[in-house]
Length: 223
Image (cartoon, helix red, strand yellow):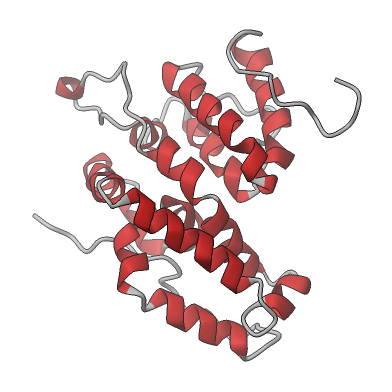
């Protein structure tokens, strides 16, 4: 059975905007068929009720990832980069970003986090026995892991959500591979840079010193 694939910002945008141009920009990009067909995990994770609901089902989540991971990546990646530039312009959401409007900030972070979250979201779970009812996606297994509910927290790092202290994600190949993807993306994603170092230190304490690449230097001189 097919179900409707989720869309970002699928509940009311409200009228909490500083400018009139920012909601117009939202309306424009949300009606863009290319954007919705990209199914960007980086936007769906925080702004889609449909995605949140579907995430309770491993089957539905796997179907969403199948679609999200089979898109034309260069096309979607270029679109996200273009939107990240556009949203910051004074005649789009510039004024709203200055006043830290949560919707505008979330959209900007979602655009800039597209690449690392595409790679992390589409990562195959090498340890998964799909015959055992698991998914072959790391993210789907993490998001539906009732024994280690904190395993999915790591995916929010590129969106500016730091790993909560005391989180205990499962020390799996998936976690290791996901952290490696984020380590490579740090240089191009400032929001990720702010959160990666702290998360990698937590993961090292939990999973052992060689579990993550520590090639990323904290911005302070002390290492």
